[in-house]
Image (tube, rainbow over all chains, first blue to last red; front, side, top):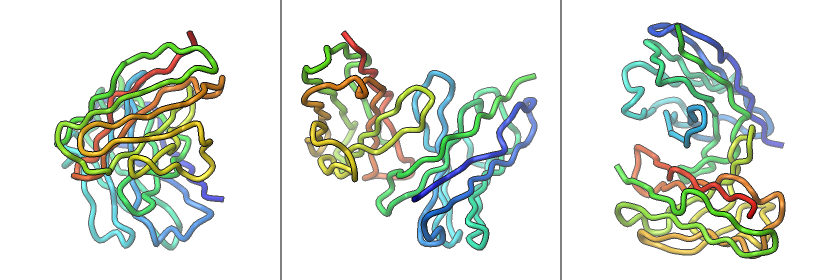
Length: 118
Length: 108
């Protein structure tokens, strides 16, 4: 079945960097747009970024534009999020999610927690 | 940016009763609306897409309705496993893709 597993989260100081990964299985990864969505502790959901199936185009929420970069390696069935200049307000569980074709999200991974704190 | 507003923030309902959750868009989104359910410590899962189409494996007690700016998720007879947080999300006008703030459905 379709499975997404995120990794790479952890504790990082403000201004630091972190790279998240999402390993996909159970479907033809290169056929689908992919997304990152985050959820701050006790808060709601915030879309972060998407990338097209070929990786040729991407887009970002204003809150992360210029600091985060989404990428993918279709040969490795993997999605990435490079996060630079991290701020306390970036603290959240980061989920990767597949776009089934209409700009919504199904399924989601289990998430990886990023904590930005000194 | 389209702002999605859910009401109420918290809904207390007894098992076996009907629950009605609302979602309003700040401008028309046609039927480009999804409902997700999130249980504590879990990722969200899709319940309804296209405002009214149940996702695969979702019980028939879940139904969605609405178009334009007003949408409703109805759970006809609440089961214990239905107590969770529910989010709506629009996908008509993006980026950004936007979510409502969520409705917490709790046991009365």
